[in-house]
Length: 302
Image (tube, rainbow, N blue to C red; front, side, top):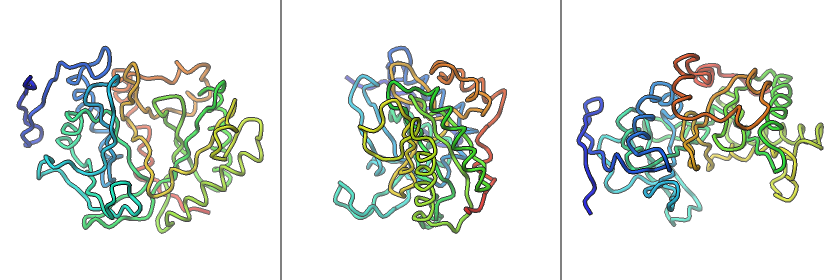
C-alpha cells in the first residue's frame, strides 16, 4: 500500500508529508501532531536549539512499537543540521553518532512527519563545529512512587525550590507530561558535567535527609513506594530529558508543560496538571513561554 503523500513548503524547504489522516493516538492524527508542532515551534525551538535530539518514534502510533533514534537516518535531508557526538560505550558499537539538531521549523516538521512524538534533549549544547559545551542547565526529575501522585511531587518541588534558593538559585517547573514534574535551574558555564551532576546529587540527598517520609534520592525502586524519587541522574551528559512542549505517548496526547509555582501550590489532583495540545497552545497565547528564563538567566553554582 502506498503512503499518501502531501508536498508542502516550510520556510523555503520542500517536504513530503505522509499519511496525515493516520491516527498516531486513538483520537489524534498524524496531521494534528504535525500541526501542533508547527504551531508550538516559536516557543519550543529555543529550547531545542543547539541540543543533540533523541527522537522517540511511534511509526504505527502509540499502540504500536516505539524506537529510540539518536543517529540521523540515511534519508535525512541535507539541510537538516547534524552533529557528530562521541558516544563511548554505545550499544551500537560506534564511538560517535550523528545526532539531529532541531534548530528550525522545517526540521521540527520533518521529525513530526517521521512520527517522532517525543523529543528528548541533554542539559548541554553543541557548538558550530560539534564541540560539546559544558551544561547550561541542571534538571531534577520528581517521580512519584505509587500511591504518591503529582500532588506530593508538587509539595516536594516547593521544598526543593526553597533548598535551591538557599544556594542563591532560582528554579523553574514543568510537568513531565506523564505523572511527574521536572525542575530546571539555568546555570553559568564553566561548571562541567561532573560538577553539575555532583551538585544535583548532593541537593537531592540533602532533601531526602530532611524529609525522609516524603523524598527518596536513591535509585532503588523498592524504596520509592509512596514517596517522590528526586532523580538527579539526568545531569549525566549521556542522558536526556523530554523537551519543554514535547508531546508524550499515552492514550491521549499530553504535553510536557511549563507551569507556575501558583499552579503547583493549588494542585489537588493529576488532572489539574494534565494539558492537551490545544490547552498548551492556549496557555502560550496567554502566558508566553514560562521557561524563557532558562534561555537567559544564567546563575553561578555555589
